[in-house]
Length: 134
Ligand code: THU
Image (cartoon, rainbow, N blue to C red):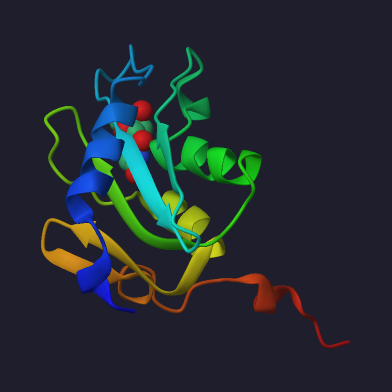
């Protein structure tokens, strides 16, 4: 993956714009996420909370919904921000969501620089693990 070709500023801007749609009255912690797809599209999402707290949708949840609803595809690069625009790591569950839709060599921006999907979710459970031998 040629990470130099990724416009991280544009991705951060898309994540920040998405964050502004956040519905987070319970945590008061707005989150926005954006993903660059293999075909050049950018999809985004924001966290959507619920009075039943455990039903909260993380920004990555709505992002993968947007991905499916706008033609599908695979993620090349990912950026997640908080209300201040600071980069955020995806939570454990959301790493799994992103893993499902990763392009080969997918990278993420983190507080410690660019990381691959494999680095942030090693030994991941994936579709191949569903293939059972009788
Ligand atoms: N949140 C996300 O949207 N994505 C993450 O990866 C981490 C957490 C949201 C969920 C909740 O609305 C708020 O951040 C505080 O946990």
